Image (tube, rainbow, N blue to C red; front, side):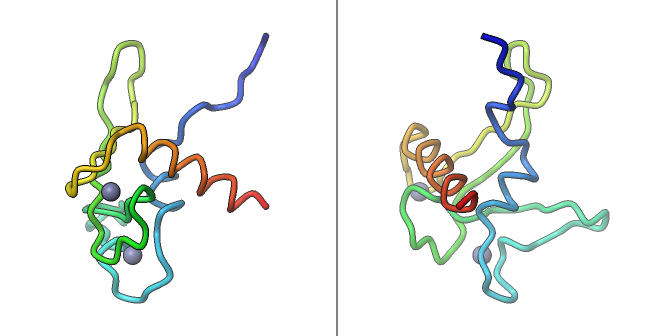
Length: 93
Ligand SMILES: [Zn+2]
Ligand SMILES: [Zn+2]
C-alpha cells in the first residue's frame, strides 16, 4: 500500500484544529513572530474552557517534527489522539 497521506498533523495544524471561537481565549496566544504558543483545548474532555493541552514539536525516532500533546488535567494520550481524530472528521464534513 502506497499511502502518502499524512498520518499526523503538525503543531500548527493541530492548534488550528483545536482552537475555539471565543475572542481573547488563551488558545489564540501568539508570539512576536505570529506563531501560536501556550495551551490549547483538549479534545478528550470537552468542554475544556481553560485550555489545558500542551502541544509541542519534538524529535521522535525517525520523525524530525513529531507533534506531542499532553493534557495537564491528565487525559490519556490515546484519548487525546482519538479526540483529535474525531475533530478532524467533524471539520471534514
Ligand atoms: Zn480557546
Ligand atoms: Zn484533557
